Image (cartoon, rainbow, N blue to C red; front, side):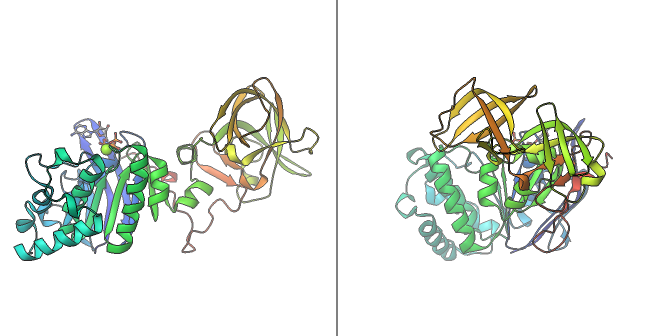
Length: 388
Ligand SMILES: Nc1ncnc2c1ncn2[C@@H]1O[C@H](COP(=O)(O)OP(=O)(O)OP(=O)(O)O)[C@@H](O)[C@H]1O
Ligand SMILES: [Mg+2]
């Protein structure tokens, strides 16, 4: 077990800055997922913890001790890769044990015992004498996990370990990884570009973009209180709608004014500061409901341009005041392209972002810096960008 700390970690490859000063705390026994688009620096961050790359600046610590200069083999971390990295000429058992003797203090007998335990945990007992070519993708990935598990490392580092699997197997392995972590409680840093995987697996999710940490939070809080526009649009599928509006303060409260609507904004932190200026209104498709045409003043009209049946819902793409907007209707709604519909946003689910910085300035569900699970203000490192 171990706690990992990244302190202002920066990594350059020549002219390319892959990681631009990251602070991160991975507490002992936690499962932290790092998510972000391709090229944002996820693998680099993981490789810096593993010691496969060295930091250009900053520090990586394990239980407070700096790992800078410590060889990968002496860090007591085990890495699991996307492409399994199994030796094709060795059996599953040999793949799991190969190198374990020199990497750990275990004797042969102990290693054998650990293979038996890991094989049972991973349900691969009957496959141990097969070579990788005779295993399915999911089975290979289990062997790769088994290799990490028998070493009983302080930390698991996993780089998109499920991305080579088909959708169904990925979902099953995802659940098994969660179960595995329940059982072993080994500190784990897990990298993925798949936001669904991040949301379902992580105790805590780190959203990265362009070499920087954008927000660190629980999955639900990322969804409900995105720190900025990037997080708001990256987390959630279909993505949050964002529309340019002007915030107007009036006798009856503030409104988001758009060519297609004048939406009342419930009182909340940040609203006064936003009044009188331009802002970006964010509202998720599932927070816009189809209303009866005469259902009240807060509904606004939109023209349906495209309908997309998703099975469990009907996704509608609409035009409103020259902008595009997505909304989710019930799956068998009788709505088609060209129809005019009335939309009512959930007043508790509105967000405003600064049009220049992209920072969240208001969430109608509560204060902008809503307290997190420990009662601290939400961390939003992107509010203090220092281009060093
Ligand atoms: N060895 C290298 N030499 C030069 N540039 C590199 C090297 N490794 C990574 N980079 C660059 O650093 C940036 C971050 O790469 P990284 O592999 O960490 O991204 P990632 O978030 O893991 O992306 P993906 O989701 O595609 O795996 C990219 O711009 C990449 O091109
Ligand atoms: Mg990567």
